[in-house]
Image (cartoon, rainbow, N blue to C red; front, side):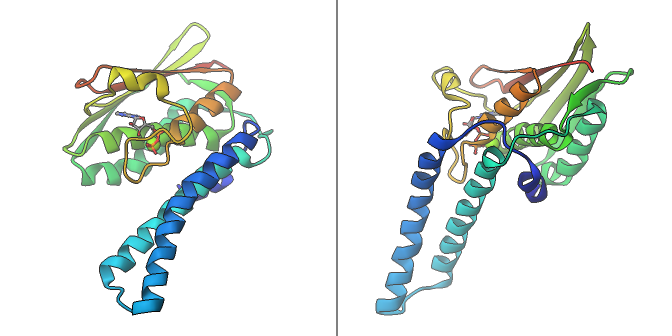
Length: 223
Ligand code: ADP
Ligand code: MG
């Protein structure tokens, strides 16, 4: 996943995002500085403090990695690929993580090939972002359903979960940078995904009823 994050490429100019990133990074930096100062003056850090410092560092690292996806040069390497293979790759990649939380995948993919023009790593990144959100929404386990079909000139992918869903008032905010309700979230995953799907001339829609899970639909043109 780290490697995918590193290799994904830019899809938009992100000057205004930089200010947001700086802001998001300042909080964990302040925490880190506070602990170091405390250690210098009183020498009282205990393992718990060190753990907090490590998780703040991890957070900075995650924000920077996700930001890099947007900040690198425009992708030029579109190739014809079968979405079914990309989906299967993502499921195997995240299967063991899902199992830890008692989550199973149920996949129904089209019998015929589902070829699209794409930058494979970027599409993978989108599915990883969505499936990770689904996993994070189901701490008590359940099923993540991945449906893929072909309708006319479109490949349709629907990923749904049995988590608690998204409150209605939150729906318009999804995809805004840094919008997150998770303690360790970056609020960049959906935004990055939307940009990638746009660059693939597709569309992405998030549907959810609070209490009834979430459903993300992606439509891509057939190659
Ligand atoms: P992050 O995962 O870092 O919070 P994302 O951009 O991936 O950032 O998601 C933004 C927010 O959208 C999440 O914090 C969560 O509140 C909401 N969200 C996204 N996917 C789901 C889902 N499958 N179920 C419930 N809430 C979701
Ligand atoms: Mg996410």
